[in-house]
Image 1 (spheres, rainbow, N blue to C red):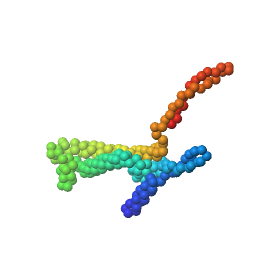
Image 2 (image 1 turned 90 degrees about the vertical axis):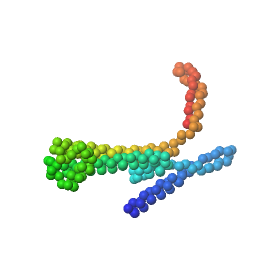
Image 3 (image 1 turned 90 degrees about the horizontal axis):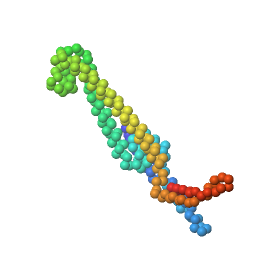
Image 4 (image 1 turned 45 degrees about the vertical axis):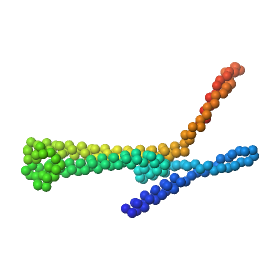
Length: 213
């Protein structure tokens, strides 16, 4: 356990170190004959690192990309699915145990006291009595149906957790690819006349549309 805590602390330290790292790019400013080189700090992110971090532990890829607002979504999704997984698994175990007990007998008279107590606590319906032969088969069928129902829901929840983990990795990779994408509002459009060769030594005039972003 201590080694796992040390490993997670090391990963967090590496991510925080990467968040503070910058990449310098020189910009040359021309002023007559004097050239001044000014370093501009530009933060970059590696899609490979983001994917690895997201795969190692949920949310690390988003922390690496500084998308902190996505953490409640990621952890909320995991917390909800893990709760549903535990709830379905607990119910599956109870119904499985109840069906395993009742499948051994053909009537309630053969039940042991502790087994009868367990089934009564599981059914929780005073109107359904184990001593009634008409309801004994009904209870057995209901326990089998409930066992299969909660097992199917548990397995589907595991698949949903795996899908959420894959989506978290993809999201971290896409964010890292678009991290330094320029989304500034500095967009210009220029329309100017342009001569057009129509063939046979004939010339015409057209319009040239140039968009810079």
